[in-house]
Length: 146
Image (cartoon, rainbow, N blue to C red; front, side, top):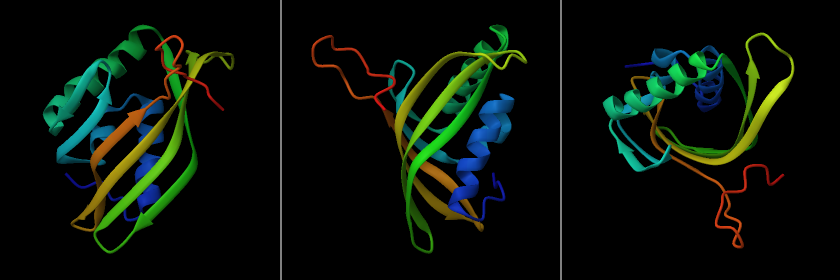
């Protein structure tokens, strides 16, 4: 599956748009078939695009059922790349809005690391790791450190 992401930055833009649109196919178009993901909604890991599709479909369907639209902001982006391999780390903020409302319902920021490879001229995510810092007193994730 190729996505037309000729630049690593294009992958991040497709990610943002696909989440906002809750578009499973667009979202999956930036992932390699053998993707390996850590920290995916209660699972230790997710290996392969078919398992990832199940998780993403459940996520997007839940958003639609609850009438949420997620706006994604990507900040503090660092990209290192060579001809066929790239590495990205950044902060990704998800802001939830109900329907067409301009009022933010909730928000969370995760730390992300992406490993990408170029396949047929397009960048694909082969590895993704998202995380939150942990409050050592409560053992709970800190969702908005900044």
